[in-house]
Length: 437
Image (cartoon, rainbow, N blue to C red):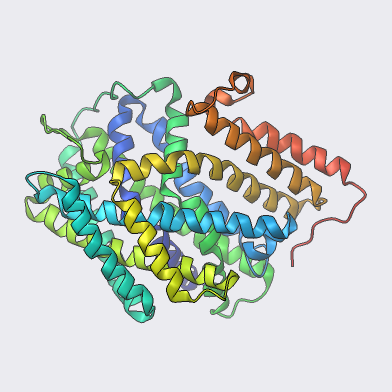
């Protein structure tokens, strides 16, 4: 691939991950972490940027992406895992979040009182628009997205540049009372889960492969190298924006302004745009975010509906669209903070499994290994992740799990992945090795 082609694919990949919904997490973390900012934000970038980078790269080791490579664990696992991924980045969490983020950034700043009725009215109109656009997927959403993504990027870069100059000499805000400095890395690492980009990368990777193939690259090695270069470019851009937004919030002076019941991240972005650009800042940012969220929400509805239509073709595409829009509408009316809070336990289960799967796929690509060396660790980590979430949320106490290595850092799954791989390798040593086509 030429440098021009790498830049083109890299920016395409960046645009896929650069959603308005993800912008709210770095400012919230930067403001809350205070003097522990760099530890927290580096950990956030590892999961919010690093894992998606690895996820996209690993998706290129098989010609048909994860649909094919996951079958090396088990065909049933491939379907179940991908269904869980699509539901998570679709109607259960990501799509409702597009609606609630749009509401909090484009409507709430201009309301005298934020009530559930306003959210209901807004989300009803929002999802009617998304439904109409999703029923006839075509070039409209892509065309709008190609305009709005650059506008959102320009708006954010301007905010970073001007606010950076304004806040440069501001002192660092102290960490909020609820932020534990001793676990700053763990907090940042798990906050990165909320972007959902690592699991979205599993769904997006095939689109990246197709984009590179359209450039005439067909050799598997060249596809892998091209994917690595393009993903690195996208990762650098995302990391720069996330760190910059966190840094600004780490130094912003709210002057006694109260967050009230608004999401902290959306409040900070709105506050900073108002302080830097005046009243026109929140209006412009709100409008761009609103339309960017509509295009993102529509794109997700289309992607998830097409996937479920492909595995259950007897159910028409339009039925899936209506079903997922209705689910998203219902969940969105919990409000942004509740949507995020509800997603945390599910993501805490899915992420360790996803990280284990991705790491094992790339390991067994370079080190020929038997199928059991994939199956045993994935099974162990899946069970352990469920148990850990149940215990941490106080749903059922299992104090023995706290004695596991790395439990305090939320990395208790790593030893199980390693031991499971070694055990599977030894047991299946004489059996055929996994091959990637």
